Image 1: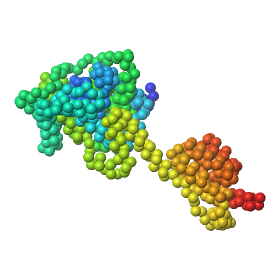
Image 2: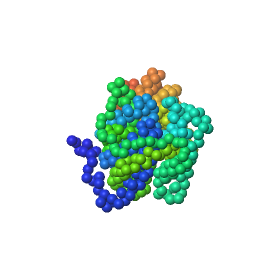
Image 3: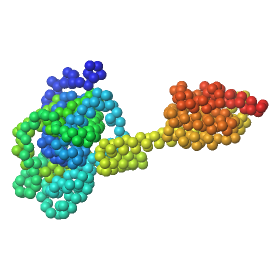
Image 4: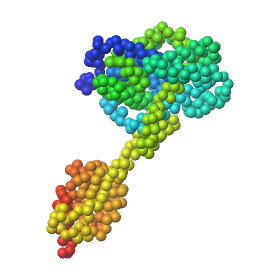
Length: 549
């Protein structure tokens, strides 16, 4: 085993400091578990795989990712973004296929970690990340509409369409579910005002359950939940659905990797701890997803909200996230009869408030005001999240950002006529020579495929001169398309009897120009000069020879 692979595996140093911080880690783990319990149930229900799958995932994936991942403070489990992705997959493949998707996605994440792809996963523009978050929040809110109204989810695959159909099915009949949602919203909004450390979501669900029981509201409840973890087993796989499973696993793995590494980066910024190892984090999240799938759970990712709670609660080591999983296991073993009485509308209310809190209004406004390009990126990513899926949305956002960035780089390329004075270079050169027979152009910035056509258009318009001197010392970027455009320019000018001289090209650029065949378009190999002085002297000799001829 190579040293590189060993660095991705658990080691004794992972638990350094636990003896000194075990009290704060224990308290932080319990605090996170209290916050995670209603969210695990809610995300399990929202995704369509059931509350028990959400709990199993929070326990198993939470412990495995904490032990094997690359972050000291990351808390993993079911998340809203993953629930959004799973809803159409459950509709397409069935809930029984989701554990297999988790296992396959986990294996892909392990492979990504082993290939050291972690460093590339978080290179996302700020407007794309915020647009992604806004789109997720909207989807989460729309997914809760049927449960919040107390009607069955319409058989409509599109989330927005299902929400509209649910409103039509409800049509003002039955307010019990909305009463429960209202109780949850009031408690979740009021609890932080009373004391910041109060577990608002748990208190809200408890309050909603009490109100529903006392007032005898006609609302659906979670129902029976197994009082133990299921035995691990390989998920059943339909051979005819392997392609669909593989495509689903690829999307889930991409989302899990991106969200987990973003969450780990947030944790690094909030706490004074050793920065996370992105490659090891991918491996740990992959192992967590494999384990969750083997226990019949759903795919998991690093959870930004729970990770933030963990940091604020004083966690110092990965032991806190492990404690969070153990506490949830105790809840499953001891309190499942109580959990069975929780109203589904209450969980929908928790997710509705969570969706609203996900959107940072001031940040969205700042991005929208910063520039048209950033506003376009935010809107496009959010819109693509609603219209397609999260992975496609991120791809569209990144592609659009890359296109806008390339446009700006292309615009920064300058092909300016250089007002060189004879006294600056060589006193023997006549002023008339530069004014009437030689033109000097300075190439700055980047000459690549985005700027090649503009380069050709501007410089082929040169006429009525004998020599064109191209100063290339300020050219920072040159690709094969730019080099080919340079060759086309030289060929066109030489065809019209205008000699072209290249001055000061960088060695790497000169090598590329030669490889694409552009250098051969020059009239002579000595038409590549090291300095402007040498180039203008060479241009003068050309002028003298032409006049003598």
